[in-house]
Length: 340
Image (cartoon, rainbow, N blue to C red; front, side, top):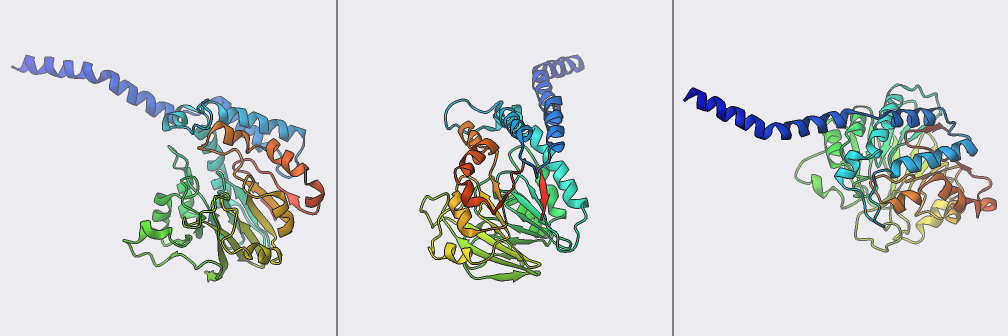
């Protein structure tokens, strides 16, 4: 009887051994970051984000090719979990974001200074001497790096509900940790069953002040689709006398006069969707600095990636060079930052 049990256990072990080996391989591969990712990470670190020269443009092309590796080749097809598991995107981005989050935690900001980090797609973190604000921070599939921001950021803002802008698990944990969270109207339905006193859904076009930060949400569609039923917003954030405007994926305003009003608002820093915001709209808003975002589009198709490189943006902006000549354009790689 005992011998029969041992034979049965051995047979069971043999049957499940391939599964166990596969699980172990997947775990080890998940933890492994190839040398190529480390090398590209260091190249970006050695590049100057304030100078757009030939070397930086070449690095942009190298980054594009690296991120495209492993993406589906069929036109318009977005990556699956398997693509992201086997491809280069998460491996490199985890390196970039871990470094950026460490900088966010440890960097010293002088009085009157702002430091802004570009994360994934439209995700940014804004740090002043006494406040840290995150907009559209969301983890890509199989990653948990940006959740480390929960302990550091004071205020989270979300422009709309797309998965690369809106991370419910991150926001829920932030609310549980008594962090401030701002969502557009009608996006907070996922939290309705729980009472979070620090969850805000301000009325569109009506400024509110939260912990010393003045915030105005403007109702928009999504990249010009004309649909104003879905929750989507631009945010004007005013802190320490500086005005920062963030577009999310919005393009057209429900209230057509809002853009004219913003043109008179003396915007200092414009964080815009590079594809949805036309250079002439940038000219009309007259910001001191424009930061085109949604570059190197992660979790999207090859075509979207190709249309979000430094080369694509500079080709477009060059056509309107005279219109933008008094505006400082900052092109940032993922995880890079600049000081205003």
